[in-house]
View 1 (cartoon, protein in one colour):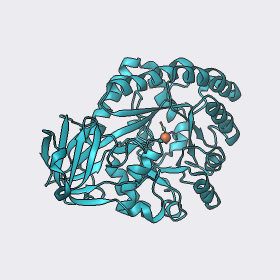
View 2 (cartoon, protein in one colour):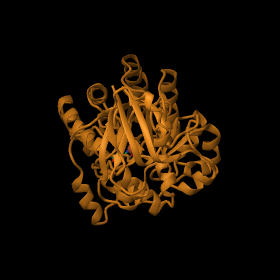
View 3 (cartoon, rainbow, N blue to C red):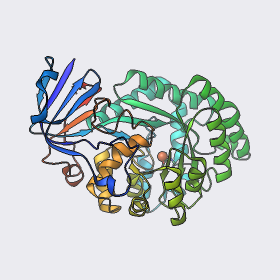
Length: 414
Ligand code: NIG
Ligand code: FE
């Protein structure tokens, strides 16, 4: 089965030229080809280049799509979400408009614990149904790979229920799904008086069981004042590493809490959030090759400060962007909206934002060999947009410009 996209008005390849990710000025290099063709064979990209250089003998009766009206991009990689959850927090949204802070709402029993109560009460089937609809909508908005965290269960059975739901979605849904264990999201109320017992439970029962069943590829910790300290986080992540997990951290989201320093120390794959990162830590991230995964939708939605994207880019740290989609701190899974916010609020250029949502986001999942750019040998996740050029994605915000979704070589019909 061959599919030939020909005469693409503008193809943004984000080609990596063999690099794991792009840093510094290279983040602005999108590898654009005007009047391009892309040949897909089965699930894989077979040829990419200028339409007039396409060797017709490669075409073995391909289905041809004339893409002269469209801009083509790699499918977006959303490398940080909490997409599996039950319930809603629209009540908290309303409270925040009246001046209540995210932290104050959490201290009064809302926040993450509100979603934990709803998620514990839901069956696996219900969680999958809710999540599957969200994944459909994300594909329709140009996202083709999604990382999903547990962390709304917080007891062994409920965390396993979430991880099983995530793994079953990975098997059954068209979306490429990457599971992460976030048992250390918050200390559940039943362990409030003895938090160490909960950390023991995570380290001694949950992690070994999840490793044995291979239910998660990454282990993440919410390293934050009032949640998990640097020492707690180190203990959990070292145990995770010894069991074969790759590491991630929620770092410096609400306060400067030392999480990014720990990410560098442990050589985590990504340090996420970084709204409060100290300048002295930035070079350490670069030296350790940690991807700075920024989540501007959270700063926007909670009206908090933004991560220092310019300083990170100028220091040579690979910067990626994701939605953090969750019912509390960012109820949006639109990557183009994140690009708009990154450009207007963090002064990233449209080109940097594009690299940050594709190749660098793939690197934040150690999947840069498979996805994140339109290059021969990569998975055929290509999106066609009805826009004059790629800049319109961030520029003309608040609407969906997707014209066609090609996922694993298949044109999806919605
Ligand atoms: O990334 N920081 C911790 N977790 C999420 C919020 C989850 C929630 O509020 O439900 C975050 O912002
Ligand atoms: Fe998060």
